[in-house]
Length: 91
Image: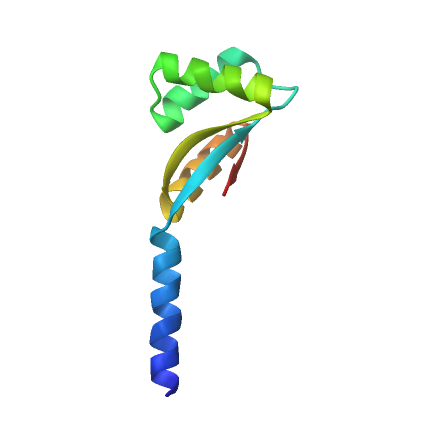
């Protein structure tokens, strides 16, 4: 019985890793538009227009969804963005 329970736990953990999540950029009073745009282009591979739109939306709404994907991928991006002083969360 324990083996079945363990298998179920591993299956759920794998499912959680594959479930689509959202990486969210939050507004701050520190970073310039230029910095945010440059970082989104470098790290998330956004084109200039996408990066500008995300920066503007973040400024006016307080946040913007910048990427969707698997948790593992988004955690890596979150770390890279945080290393460049952006505030990001995963939902």
